[in-house]
Amino acid sequence: MSDTAAPPAPAESKTDHAAPAKPAGGRPGHAARELPEPTIKLKQGWHCTHLFYRVDPSALNALSTSDRIRGRQELIEALDPAAGHAPERMQTWIVSGHKADLAVVMMDPDPLKIDAVQQAVRATALGPALVPTYSYVSITEISEYVHSVEEFAEKLKAEGMDESDPAYQSRVRGYGQRLPMMNAQRLTPTIPPMPVACFYPMNKIRDPHANWYTLPFEDRDRMMAEHAKSGIQFAGRVSQTITASTGFDDWEWGVTLWSRTPDDIKKIVYTMRFDEASAKYAEFGPFYIGYVKEIADVVEHLKL
Image (cartoon, rainbow, N blue to C red):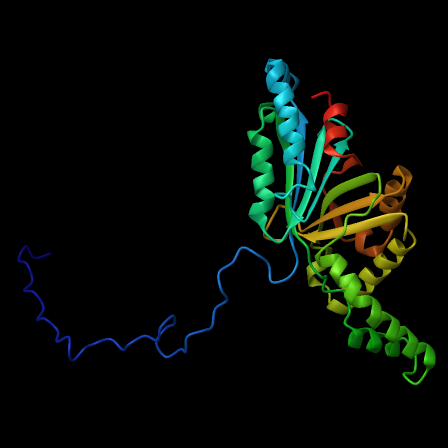
């Protein structure tokens, strides 16, 4: 290599070599795209968070009597579903087993309104004694396996029904009347007045011999229809909300069940595991079983 420095290259004319102007917000030669307004809210549906806490007895016993009294009141106020700061949906459970003592389920269009409750719990005088053990972040959605009225009508015809048949027309009309209500319940769920609650996350597996995501939609749709028929057996006894979590948490869905009796939780989970969609393609995370109580009753039960 020569030690002599190469002479500098002659300066280029800015006039002769000016770069082509770029359209605002895009690359040269491409029209600017119309982008949505930035927002933390969903186009449709709500944010959802499940929080689980364990009581730390050492931290609890380290609090003074006055701090415990103040902390109890602060916690009751923070988790009051009727308070002005409360999310659209908020519920507390007493959780059985060692995995948690308290569960808080919240849903709202604004995820920071949900998070504000979590921070309010942490900031109470009881905060040091309430140790988070698990959380699950998800969103409500309308599943791709929920048929439009037109798709439902085509499905009936594929099953052999004639569109001139009054029974066909009645079923299509009935489905069209129910669908808006069903979709509203999926996107903005109403929590049922049932005393028993259960939560678990789940995936559809990607095993080389049973990969859900390589199946044709028609096969997946058929299996999910079978799955739904199993669940219908428990109508009035069990209510279910499935929230989506792809990109939001470690699993793909969160399943929340409410039931009239503990027996029905066991029965519905057991029954539906025999469906092909579960038996062959489902993977389940940890299960949490709880009993729905107002926060004042939870505080008393946990001896806070």
